[in-house]
Amino acid sequence: MFDLTFTVDAQDTTTPLTLAIDQMVIAGWTGRDPVARDKHIAELQEMGIAPPASTPIYYRASARRLTQEDRIECTGGDSSGEVEFVLIGWQGRIFVGCGSDHTDRKVEAYNVTVSKQMCDKPIASTLWELEDVIGHWDRMILRSYATIKGERVLYQEGTLDAMLPVTELIARGFPGGKFPDGCAMFGGTFAAKGGIRPADRFDFELEDPVLKRTIRHGYDVVTLPVRG
View (cartoon, rainbow, N blue to C red):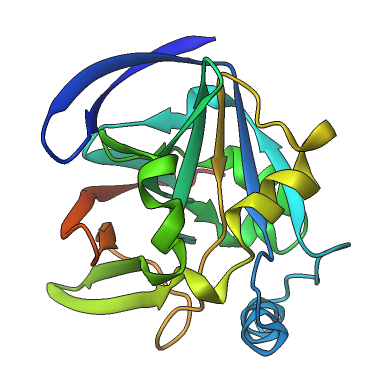
């Protein structure tokens, strides 16, 4: 277990909150539309990555991989980011944030679970209460930008109505449909525009067009050499 400090944005006020995180879950293949979901599966199959055993599927990774830093280090040049909403449980409440499921694609080709453990998972330092956004959940927008060789391009974009309802995602992933305290869960992603590819920098955001606010974060990717 370890602590991360966030700012809870409640529209008219902001409050610092330190949360103890003891588990991380990465939900995959959470698309509500089977056509869009299968597009992402096909995208990864082109890279030699086998299709999932079930949809959705709930991977586990070390909670210590979560980071709020603006730089991560990855071994080799085969990793890339994915924007996702993040749920965090605390004292029976659920908060919503935004993160990047940065993943080693070369490792993913032979073992998805292991690949989820290979890279740090950057997360923004701002959270919203789930109860403040659940009424317009489907209208919220996930978006990411990749900076590749100096050019910043739109990498992913979509509204959450393309994914399983958050209540269903929780119900299918946890006993009794109760989201546990201390759990951080990544909620799935969209296909990359132009295909999955590495970047020198990755910026991501969750936009709430109803309450007119956005959670943002970005990070540089430092590539470490592979020896031997």
